Image (cartoon, rainbow, N blue to C red):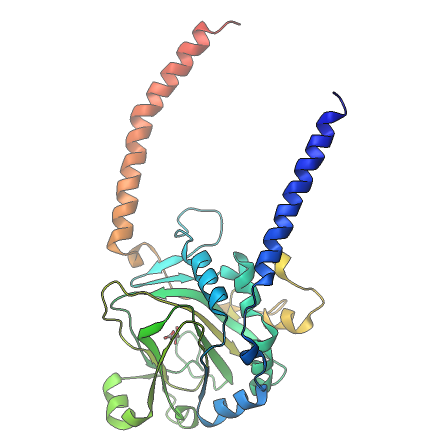
Length: 331
Ligand SMILES: O=C(O)CCC(=O)C(=O)O
């Protein structure tokens, strides 16, 4: 009798360990990038970024991986009074900025050696993750023409950098648009924001609308003008990953990461994630109560009212029952 219990516990512990290992194996067994992407010569990417200002690879992310990542991160509820990282609502968008602290697959994607080889080819050995996000964009979202070589207050920095967009679902609405070769002239006037009408008037022939199926990978030079085409289709939600990487080692948004994902012997990884370096830039977007949408507010109000009503009615009834039980229970 005395020996059976520990053995059962050991068996349970072994079963739990086996199931945890299986889970890890399942995650790592799913390839992130396609063999075609892994065969790309980083120097070709560099040449395209330098001459055209952007580079597109259609079937870069394995479809299964893209869908699984979207399912995982898209299912997280908003981080409302939860003691963990989670997504926030910003008007027509949902941003999961700190997903490096929530998802191993997201971490493995963002830090993948293939992406790092592209950054190295274009930026040299010193590059750093400036910000990262999984995001969903719904109807009425749009982003005006802009460049990314700037501080959070819009001051041009001139620091070489790369923007990365990955489509997790087919994207034929609200696509990323880039202005071909604008990396060669955008630095001239010191501006980082541009009006739609001036781009259409002066550069209509250079606008590239990147309509692609799930799994597309797009890299653009930080000086390349780009925007998000307005989303007009009711019910449509664009789902993507966005990264900014640049050669400025003294600034980034705050990177929050689950330390168990990190290989402490990978110096380039530690530098990329900014270990021991200043950050200092505010986390985007500046979300708050005012950026929740009407449906969020309705849900919060109705669930709060239900909770308060339950506390006021069931609470006293429960306490009365407990008191009665204490009086009658055998001592
Ligand atoms: O995903 C897009 O369409 C563009 C994202 C972007 O440029 C940004 O968030 O600054």
